[in-house]
Length: 395
Ligand SMILES: Cc1cc2nc3c(=O)[nH]c(=O)nc-3n(C[C@H](O)[C@H](O)[C@H](O)COP(=O)(O)OP(=O)(O)OC[C@H]3O[C@@H](n4cnc5c(N)ncnc54)[C@H](O)[C@@H]3O)c2cc1C
Image (cartoon, rainbow, N blue to C red; front, side, top):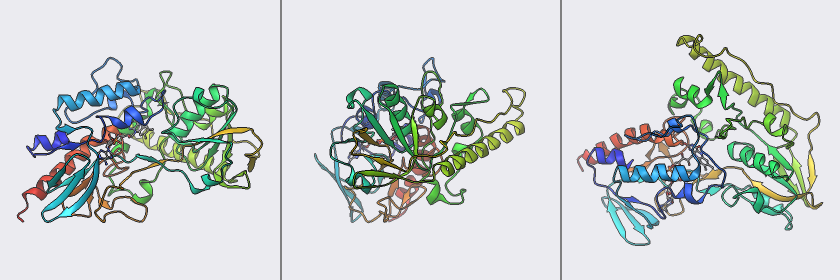
């Protein structure tokens, strides 16, 4: 956004509570790599220049990439500056920080969509002897007690953590609700290559049938491993992970799982096949059928004949629970009435329901790719146009 504002000579400042790329420095586990390929780290006027475009960055590499970009574009960042309040003022907004105050006609909310782990209320019922973590407090399997681990949630975060914890010798039980299955590679290319090329990631917020639902769709079960491995449920069960249904409740020390595991897996298989149909159609229409290997389908998800419906959490079998149940943004500092009942900012493609206020970085803000690093490029372009027009408007 800063780069897009500079291009229009719009005077601005970027306030950052910690250091540039703070979320990648402090809020991720040790082994994490981007699940988006290096070539897809495209920012306005800058892209990956290394010798491994099809690889996946480690966290230190992401930090270098974003820090380097901030320097490259000479972004006017004030680090170590926490915004404590944003209020309406006569001609715009009053922004208070722990250092100073700013008056401005426009504000862009770019504080990220994944600030706080979402932990369901049923977590209150977890017996005290069990250690509980979130993806933001989890660092590596070695820091966990020996013994069984229950990972709750099977999206990108849950499957990645389940995989490495199981490999560390701690048997994992994975509670699986609604999820999005995805292969790392399809017909010889990265699935992100396909979705990018076929325009799936560019699908617009005003083109989908149900944008509220589209914004809640979980992340695809992917990881960026050097081996280009799949991280779907079949890959996990082949390493010994036990699948159970969605964690529905915890009562008297007992975990209760939904009986819908098979349905959820069948639905995810169906949706994967639909996505692959779309990609195949696009390949044919664009003359790629002679260039890439022929279409194929993946083995349906193998689900236990009878999945466990309950588990005694007081038996000592489970020593740790990791809540991989998603993240939410934190707007506790925002004193402008623009939040809906779920605490999310009300906006139309990033134009917030308050004059001169904009939002960037939220899921499906304007496009399916909006919450990826790669999404910022086009969204910032569109929002800078809106913001500039607002500033040009006569009072
Ligand atoms: C586990 C995980 C894995 C991901 N993997 C990928 C991936 O592989 N590829 C991909 O493209 N995307 C990935 N994402 C999404 C990724 O978060 C976004 O692509 C990207 O970080 C969005 O950047 P952002 O600047 O909008 O938000 P953030 O990176 O969250 O940055 C927000 C910044 O605002 C600062 N801030 C917050 N509140 C305040 C305040 N009150 N005052 C001052 N500063 C404040 C924070 O310190 C932070 O530096 C992943 C997300 C998660 C959670």
